[in-house]
Image (cartoon, rainbow, N blue to C red):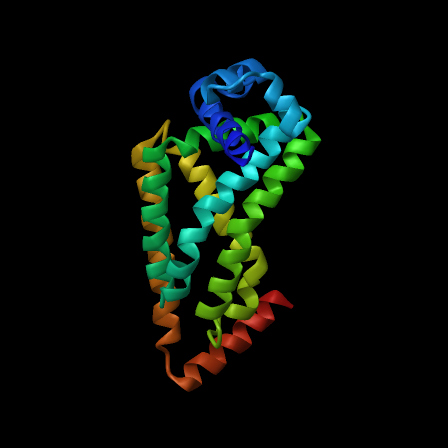
Length: 208
C-alpha cells in the first residue's frame, strides 16, 4: 500500500518533468507509475491532491540532505558555493523543469499555490536560520532584514534556475555578482571596532 502511494508520488513528479502541467493527468501519472489510474483516486482523492503531496514530498527529500551542509558553512561565500552546487544538481536532475511547471500551475490554482509556497518555505526557513547565524554580530545584519533576505535569496535562485535556460551567460554573471556582494560583507566584517560603529550608525540612519 505504502509502495503504491510512493510510486504514484514519484510518477507525478516524473510526469511533470516529462509532460508538463498540462499533460499531467490521472491517466498519464498512472502510466508512468505502472499502476491502474483508479489508484490515484483511491490513495489521494484527486490529481490536484496527489500533485500537492508530491510537491511537498519531493522538496522534503531535496532539502533534507542539505540541512547538515548548511549548518557547516562558515561564510556567505561558502553558502553561495553550496547554492551553486545545488543549482547544478537540480538542473542535471531535471528538477528545474518540475519547478517551472509547478509554478505555472500555481498561477491558476490557489490550492497548488498554497502548497508550492509551503514547499518553498522548507528552503526559506533553512536559509533564514543559516543567514541569521552567519550575519550574527555583523553591521549589515539589522538593515539587511534576515527574514526578507532569505526570501530574496530563494527568489533569486528560483529566477536564476528559470533564467539560465534562456541566457546561461547572464545567469553566471548574476551568480558572480552575488559572490561579490558576499565578499563585500566579509570586508565589512573585517573593519575595526571604530569603523564598525560608524557604519552601524550610518546604516541605522538610512533605515530610519
